[in-house]
Image 1 (cartoon, rainbow, N blue to C red):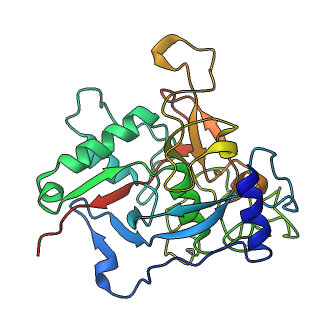
Image 2: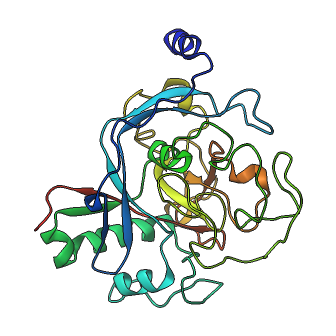
Length: 293
């Protein structure tokens, strides 16, 4: 902690270090075998967590420097219902799309963490993806926040204010100095609002998103400075022993039902891994080992 304090003092007002890798050509983007669009998130260093001056912050959002040492690809949209059905059809436990708000371009929700991980495994196993050397996974919590910020150090990638004209959340409770606006009371088509600087849509609101990490409220206090992956095992018990739901996992981004505070870039919350939530969907990260020409 002493070393981290020295880092923060040295950083002063410059709380963000720009990504090291510029996004310059079409190789930074690809469309995969289920027509999912992914964009490269460059390697770089950022300050994770929230400033003590950030409105409505939580104490667990301890600000600390994190180095993402390798670029990775991330879906520019949350996983859509059509993509989920295409990949999961044929899986023994897949019956149908259980999303509450159905429609073309709508994000999938009511998908447990374990099924989101199985989706990544099945997508990685498709012949076209194997040929291209693509391996899909859920993003780590650190990767998610880095991608969400898109080079920003404010509460949202839009700045310190958030209105429901900018993202899908409960517009009766905006953030900062924003005015109240419409509350949709449901999900909306992905990409309905402006993207961040990395070209990623709906990082604030619409559906919250599963991350790969087990949830630990104190993890920021002693997490690695490079590519943190979260604790290696569950930390916070759920008090539910059935269905192996005895530990929480990380969920990020806020949803259509949350207030503006819950959509902040640094906001951390949790959910049970084997429970369906109308509020939670996911997007995928991808590591590319080799790409066919």
